[in-house]
Image (spheres, each protein chain N blue to C red):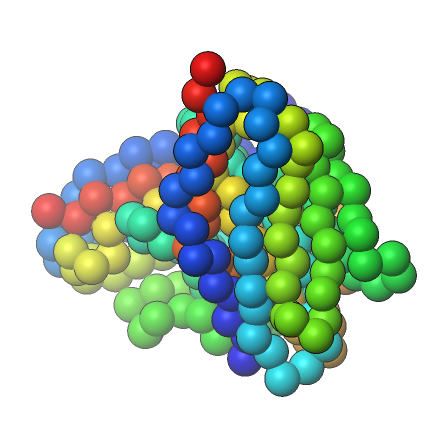
Length: 115
Length: 114
């Protein structure tokens, strides 16, 4: 079984400032890692994913995340946020042996970008 | 439309009633998933279909919950004898390839049990 911890339930940040949303996971097997974003009144959409290869993954809208196996982390970063980045962000993992699409999600981090 | 469609978007029912929630996936997507999202929580896996069959129903909380996908496209999540604790947003997602982790989610059906 896997679990995901997103310690920050809310992150306020000023526009054009950098941001990091933290994600740690626990699993006894190798995992795939994902970040999904949910804009107000919209469905969840994939921001980026790590399946294999380079540990630095780039996603849509200028976001990137780095897989750190030793620290079991997959933190999400953006060097300069925009008002339109205000949304809820979910980190998720899946068991590689069981097929990649049964996701275990964290509780989410609400990113609020202010002027 | 091109995305995953869920109906109804909102459903209010009384304790003990029967409820059906419908999901119309993206055309051509063979995999379909149901998740449940309670207030302040992340989505929790309920069931996964590959084609018409339920490949994994380990997330269904009890036997009051059942889902079908008879023709390998539209799916219906059925909840019998609803309880107040069933109140949540029920999310449906579909995917083309079961091994890439990219799920396309609908906007969800918000169920409120009074």
